[in-house]
Length: 508
View 1 (cartoon, rainbow, N blue to C red):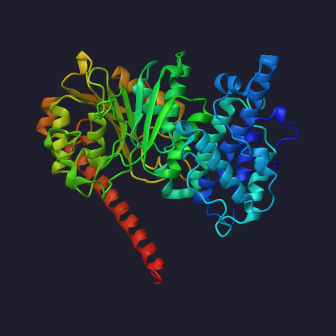
View 2: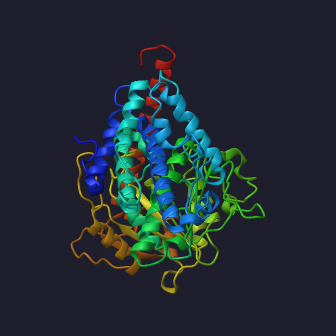
View 3: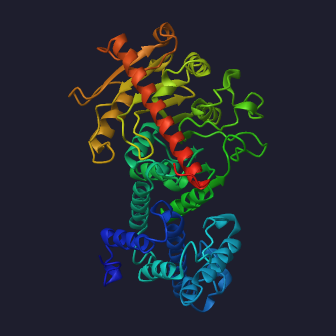
């Protein structure tokens, strides 16, 4: 495989993707594939910053001529500052203890750009040769040194697409861990299309992972002919490495004005207004971790931001509805919409979750429940649903909930199923028009009045409301979904136990 084309001026999308995957393969052996992202993305971003800096420096010199000054260049041309001694070329020249030189350069760049790049490179100790041998790091850097990533050689769209390609490849290598940072783009595309972001909207993902939802929002506005720079983008992510990947993702897609905060959204929400209250957003979108059992249920009733809507505290061993409560709490009161990916269990589990369903329906916040096919995600094979909430519904949907069964709309794959562009269009049209446009029997829907949902005890299992499915069939669907969730939880617990036994010196 060619790691870089002979003529970088004719770099194709495939050339770029092959080169970047070649960089990852340079680490194969000493680095677990599931950890590739922590090493490849920071080096990619560092090379990109340096190349763009050189490109804009040349522009400044050409434009300003004898009037050129470093101060004017930094203010009018450069996005980031690169301190003396921290440029890629200077670091690459160091052939012994390269990790030490790389550590110093990345720290210097972060310190020189505190408002933009603080923490963006993650927490890898590049000088630790036990984790990353000198030969492997050198091979990684040599791949990138052959590439020129400035705008004259690689367009922003190409680079953004290549970054998405790497995210997808790393997700496949990470298996179930992929759910921590990656949502399949066809699912993201559908959810963003449904929420229909508009120029000037504020958009937030409180569990943003690698910021795929925010990037797709930008692309959707751009595709519709709007100005994506008018969007206000926000995200929060607990994992340090993933938060850095999110910020790099946005920068590499040409987005410079955004806020990504690192921290626990439940324990320390950081997207606040000047008065310290939860900030409100036009669009709140997320694929949060399913069924968290370590969320702060014990303090939720006294949450200073009053996110325990209706005074209801979701169960301590399952934080699904806590995510929904947070998202509804941050939805704009006039033009707010929420879209969230959830396991089917949120639709029918009893106890406090049933109380939250009643609150959402009786307060007329839940607009739609959309059942998607199973096996769409790297992190889980169970079927999932999209829940759509609105602060204000249209007149025809007031006091109703739209149920859409799209479980038959998918393209079968070897490892994961996918939604085709046609599937996305059909599901989106069903949501917006309240009708099935495909006419092939692959989708079913029903607009259900609140009274009927009350009759079923606020059970939102889709099968109860779609014409043609009996109550018995709906009960079977719910039982199967509950069984799949329980089996997956057992598998996860068994894997965690095996890992702890191995760490303690026992054979699992």
